[in-house]
Length: 306
Image 1 (spheres, rainbow, N blue to C red):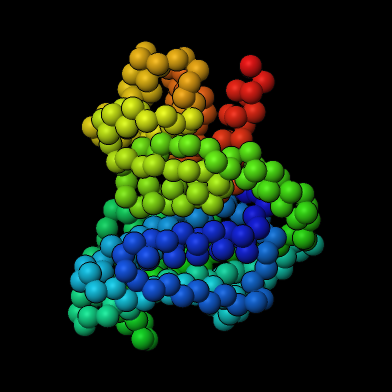
Image 2: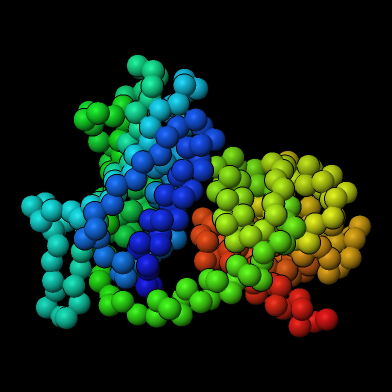
């Protein structure tokens, strides 16, 4: 576990949800309880991954094309649900349980399926449930949500931490944004949701982004001048390793800069990236701070070599 700025994570999730809703023709509404704490201990990457799955899953079930409304509610969980209650241990550490509920309402009647068992038995939901259980949390599909076609709920327990180092974190984020502003980036990502999310994060950091969905299209797009190529290493037609290898063989060993995207960031992946000439690796799910820190590191390292 590490320190999470929960308010920033919620804002980042809401920002990406709004972008995804806009692409699907949905309005997005967020409601957050003011009593939800900011500085907590937890697994930021897993929390973000689960919430992104919930959003993508609900939007994916709206097939009418007529749009509607997606709502995100964040609140303190009440103390009447046994182990989900807010409590204090024998130590000085305090814990709090936060509930995230995401619901969808389509404009057309019956356009979103209401088979709860089908959703809960899906492979992707099963993976999310395991992640949530690892964080001592609970996730479920809400039966018959009031005013909504379908809704998912997530309850997570966080350890409270005092407000510290906020000014320092804000300064670092501002510095990273200035370094990346105007950077010409080609993004190759097979998954539509991941591609949209990563593009929005890059644009938020000031990058100028073009996107492709396959490794073949990425290699073809290099007729244009890009300062950096960000590759999904696990694309099905032509994976990121092969694309990077072809770029290095046909172009400079050092230019353009290449950064890999992967959900498998073990030592073997790092070693293979170094051998091919990939300059950096970003672990999925992509977070704003994670992508900012790695791109900034790659640029600083490159500048130091020249």
